[in-house]
Image (cartoon, rainbow, N blue to C red):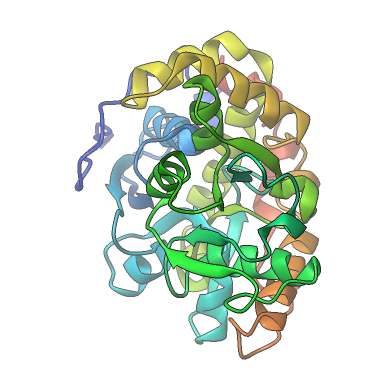
Length: 340
């Protein structure tokens, strides 16, 4: 019996608008009777692809529950059996592998690093941070580790040459820059663009995708045992991933309109600029090899190991599985054929 798709946000969020024209070839994926719980971040510009992916799965008959995870990681939610699949930060996979949790990436809602480094006027390059303070999310946060790496690459010693100030999430770090509490920080690209649109007293030092190129950003992942037991669902997720990226690349107007409808408090000018930046840095590729590139995960694993965040050196080829994307691409996914 076909089960009607349902969406239930367990930690707040906003309603999703219906996906237009879903499923001219939906018969290729009959997910009737399939139940899946997917853990995501809150609705934001960066996970629009995930929201659209979930909509497409529901149009193919899946019973999808979306769980927002504001206080725990996707990895932690999988371990706790709160979700089956997570669409979260790539470093969670690496942390899981290092701890013996066999989680595997099968897709990516965005494929290039999503951070911008912003500073107050007078800090025109990383070297100018000598004697200054930077804001991070707190101990153990990936953004802080990344900034520490960048400081070291520029000859500065964290906590000696540059003070490290725990501030909070990306929005809080952006506010700290506006208030002059810190002289630089790492924020999501859309947070930087919102600052710029507001005329904030801040400037862009650069995008992490350019400063530290080739790092994986976010991933769709689950435990290997779950993926292998649900191969049809995994292929459908991969197809939706490719199709949504095609949709994003095909229409800036549709992307902006959808984001404004689904992300509370979104700034239209900032969303429009985000789209342009995303296109410039190839955030939403439609080829499997670019969408899920093992080398990006390997670079990230090596960076975390060198920074002391991982005790074990990892081989990304063992936990990045592009076979479902390849299969989906062979069916025509990523060309718009599967979404009308």
